[in-house]
Amino acid sequence: MRYILFQEALTLGRIDKGVKCSISGCSSEAVRSISAEKVRSAGLKIGSSEKRAYLCKQHYKEYKKKTKKDKQIEKWRYSG
Image: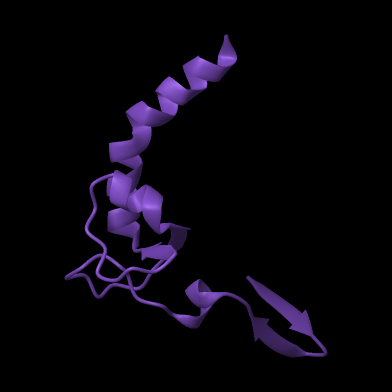
């Protein structure tokens, strides 16, 4: 997110500042920030033990595929 304040660009957050992907072995630039616990439960290997995991486009797509079934089950559970 970029906010213009008095004709200067102000960048907020680590994603805008150019943090790298948290998955071990990946050095791509991150596009999403997700809870590290959710990423670990999806089966992706995080390099460090931080609270947030930063994922590049490729690994975010992989995370979405691995959690799709779980999200559907949760949706069914709370809909009825």
